[in-house]
Length: 321
Image (cartoon, rainbow, N blue to C red; front, side, top):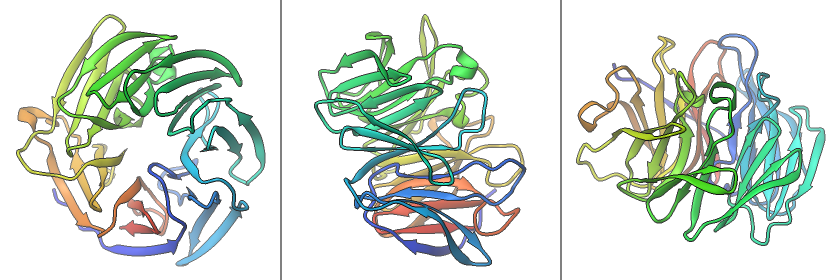
């Protein structure tokens, strides 16, 4: 079933880097959510929408450009803590704007990608990966090629911390502490990683990856082996993938895959039981924003009870509802 969505422009922000916008979780079904967005002016802000008007929750002072924004929290709790990276530092804020973490990683290169899992912080520069547990340097890895993204398997489901690096040499590198457990070769350069269904699937060990040539694939990462489940290969030429999210747009229990591309195209595919069969996904929606999408997230923002897609481009935030 195709989706019918219309566009609303929320607000102008500074220039945004990839994956620097998230929707904060809400306790309750289909309740309205707050938006956290960070820009290259170093400003982090949280806002909500009330009767069509923007309500600013808090806004930080300008500083060094923010390269990544992630949500985190203690394992088994709501992930409503906001973590941002600037140069080689990571700061943590509560949803009310209180600074609770100001951590200098001492990396020799700026942070490009970041992932938070409980009390573990995973950060990557261009070639260096570091893991910090309670802000103590625990493990590290120096990659021979450029690292494009980092994620870890769901620690709640997989019962272990398993980082995965997306690398420029068409490899997904699965790490065990400071060494490589698996090298997973994929068909194109992996640009972005995402846990399938946002929690890694039933066992927490499924990873979605988006490529620089516009395809998306799914891999299962086991302790002893890996399994390529599928890769979208419908023969269409698509722009590179910058960001992804998984969200049930119809409220029918079937997740959809939201994809933001370099050319400004927003695509929505169904992740139903037949997802990936014969290298295809069922496309439910496509829209061109005319400028590159840097972040995309599904949730309820403008109207209670209505599922929406919020996308940030280089200069503003857009809503598809």
